[in-house]
Length: 587
Picture 1 (cartoon, one colour):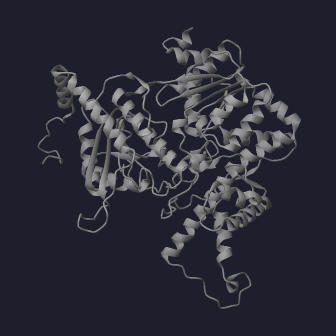
Picture 2 (tube, one colour):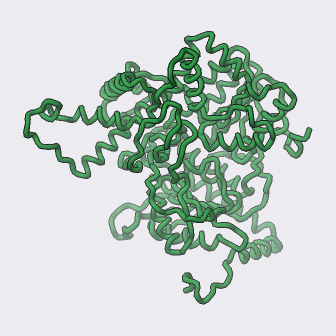
Picture 3 (spheres, helix red, strand yellow):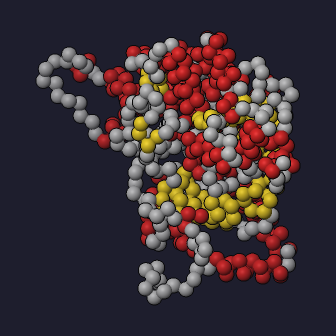
């Protein structure tokens, strides 16, 4: 068959399997999106699935857009529904209301303004409340108290998001937080009280927030049998991408759509589950196989993206004794380097970025990845000094064609992390889910602050947080700040949080196709070795990386002089061409 020509056996099995439930466990770079789209095309072409009854669910607009583009290329995308879980839930809710003569729901795209009002109301002294005595002056706030209030709003939003992703209401919050070992910024009882007041205020406005879409749609399917039967008939061929990112609310919605006669195909990689802030649970992949007897499980294990040394380094970072196979066995050895302080690290990385831009390569084939947005500020300044064009990944704010994906919502941000959302980002979305999006937000709580790093030319080095890099790839990747306290983040205290940080590091490393560099600094910028501040330590997962790297060097040395000559030629090719006399970088 033309569709499966060139596929490896496991990929072919995933595309052609005729089992009612198929679960594909696909490691980084193994072609999961290709397999998913080819399976949709195969099902449509052999008429085992009608395109108008196919629903493909994913977890971001970007992924949904890519899926639609690929399906159109395969000439099966015109009638197939592909979108985020949130968008799907909104569409079903809107359909249910329209059938009953009711308007679409109003959507609270950002609940933080309402939460801010609730918190501020709780802080006011009696004389500052409405009806206070005349002449009372306005309360004065310094910058520190303002920052603290904004941080509290973000923390409260994260607590409510944590609860709603797990289908936990206000009355059950306190006990659920206790069982989960969760330590809110205020008492769990206080969070539960504010959560309840928020729900009352939201209902009074007749609105749903983004988390409510999943919950409310599930309620409709549970409570209205006729509606549930109709939706299962319309969406009787279900495909799920990136299932490791699924939370309890999404899983419940999926199960209600599947019903008792499943036609389900899911793909995911537990090792790339990095959205725990949104309730993502990689164990839900296992539940599919447990709850559907006879599920066919297919393992995709050959990495077609990254060179062999990168695959081995990434596996070591994850703690895997046996690395997956790479279709590209050879490649340059990764580099690990320690610098004196953050400024020195930034300058070193910027210079190596400039050197990596060899003839025939675009700047956009190079990426610098960091755990937080704040780290990218120093990198941008160093790149400016080298006259290197660069842009921040995901920093654009533009028209929205979908309900905001979960990654745009703040998560469990570090205690000292500012809420740096762009001004004017708060708004109520239009009833149909369209409108202008607020600034994108990182799962670690960082936001797109509009800092003018961007190059007007698309050919620019990409600066990205580790979360935003997920799903992307570059020929050359620099992962900076690989020190304990950043990777893993200092706020990751529980075993589960540290395990997720380790998976996030793995995700970052597997973005590299050929060249990979990890760097870290002993001290923050501006501090000296005599300053008295204890030096940083490397990330606890860097030692495994360096052990494998040492073995790779030994293997390269044993390959003999001929291989050494080849490597020398590779290094020479990496050197920049001679600089012209007028080049501003000439020394």
